[in-house]
Amino acid sequence: MKVLIADTFEQSGLDAIAAAGCDLVYRPEIAHEKLAEVLASTCADVLVVRSTQVTEAMLDASSLSLIVRAGAGVNTIDVDAASRRGIYVSNCPGKNAIAVAELVFALILALDRRIPDNVADLRAGRWNKKEYSKARGLYGRSLGLLGFGRIGQEVARRAIAFGMPVLVWSRRFNRDDAAAGARPGDPQITVLQSPEEVAARADILSVHLALAHDTRNFVGASILNRLAPGSYVVNTSRAEIVDSAALAEAVRTGGIRVGLDVFAQEPSSATGDFTDPVIGLPGVIGTHHIGASTDQAQQAIAAEAVRVIRAYKDTGKVPNVVNLATKTPATHMLVVRHRDRPGVLAHVFEHLRATNLNVQETENIIFEGAEAAIARINLDGNPPADLLRTIEQGNQDILNLYVVKI
Image (cartoon, rainbow, N blue to C red; front, top):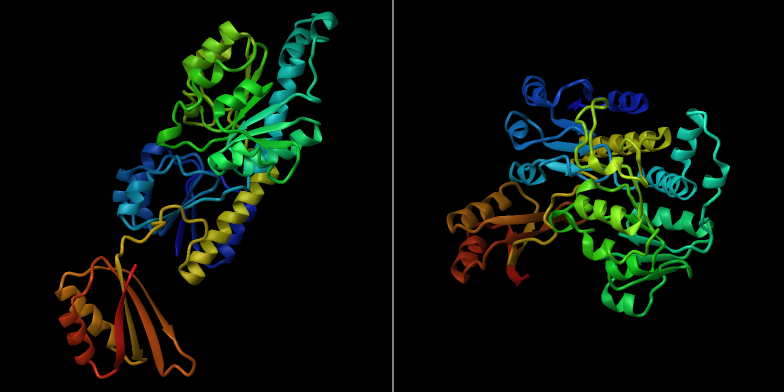
């Protein structure tokens, strides 16, 4: 199995992939526009990426059967195009959660103590203890979380350690949970019914939603305008989730302070020129999209990517796969009890094909002694009775069969 790694990757992970018997091609310097060419020339089976974009045109030029995102989320990969080509897409969820949570609190503390401004004045030779002594402190202040996945949960744990009540809105909780004031795992965590309610009650709002069609610009004026003057907003998820114009307006007119690790117009390379109007606003600080960039997180992500590749190589199964159907499109299951002999299932499938019935999923379970088996074949339609008779009577190794509506 040939594995192409097209981003920087931990040496421990490179060594483990090679030790697994894979033919490793490590090309972290590949420019985006050259990836299709390299995929075609290497005929790689597996592609590992971090921030590199994977487009439909690249997939057309490839022999890939698996793409692994060495990180959480798969927003850099055209998952729909991969699914149409039968290419697995997997990721490494949760392995950077602690690193991102740590940065969230670095940004919150930097906002509260105005650390960047402190440093800037000191470096300019200005001493202004009077101004920078004006900090509110975090103890007892409410932290609102939009999203409560692994990163949100890690942030909540740290907030509780700081003595901060935590307010949560997440789609993982239904309205009954929110109405009952559910407290998932800790009495200091309260589930609320809407993101607007979280914003209205929180002193600090931290965004932890995945980027999807319905979360683009999700945090807009209707949420930001509910924040009290002087509140803080932190976004370490995706820039596209927060309406940048509404955020800028909240800073200008609502006295909101903001800490960002993600921006709408980030350079495609690790270094480069950068401009974003929001970072120039007073009270806005930022970091260089480094939420997952700790040694601990990168080692954990590399180990998980290796686990995915090893499992695929050794078993054909893919952990953390994101693009398999969650519900089969099949409508009926054909159950065939048969002797464990060559050609039985080929006989069944041939007659199904002749009747234009498509097999969506199938499994064949062998009984002890390997004399008999039972096949469960999910179909996109209901096989007629005469077809069932033809199949059953046409092969002496079929013991019986029947249909179950799914």
